[in-house]
Image 1 (cartoon, helix red, strand yellow):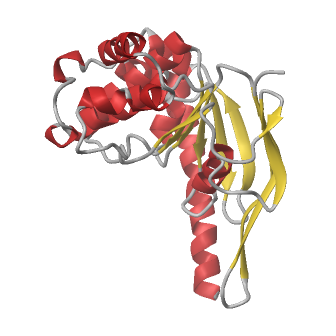
Image 2: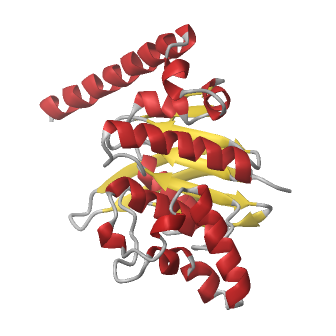
Length: 267
């Protein structure tokens, strides 16, 4: 059995004052190997909590995550994480950062060099491999983070707002890179984002989550990620169905935010 199953997942956080926060409630999803899914929703809907449970950083209150037929019980090399900030080793060079995982596995130097050089070519950083991380721009640092994740050859790549801190032009270039890596590597990717436009561009499957308790509100199967692999993303955005779906989802999330604000005012 290959793929990822999120099976009736719930997460409750118990607070010191005796109260509790139900972050997720009965979330179920099935992802085929190689599927690219974006997850969208208002703040506080449990997107990052869901990702952290899949990563093995959190144990759910109820339900389970199954990857390739095995229940997830903690972090593992078969799941790679890319954070909003690269979480890189700033005292290391680009080459050393990307090669960190293979080094920890005891891979021989020749094989590690081959993998690192290839990945730095893929993300366009071969000429920067001896640079220290702090010498790089934010976009370059996120390219290093992607390459470092891929160097471990995970089955699933988990991305938590990986492009959120980038300027508009760099973000668009990185979106194109994510699509290129998805198509070339065949990895399963789950991407969390607050941007409706980004969720449409980077999700052949898009999940909209409802506010607390976090749950699946609606799912879309979309053509735009596939279109964006070989087409300028700005051209993809001009597609009439892109604009129509964007406005539909924006209205949906706006209504959710209004509901949250109403609850807050009543409280």
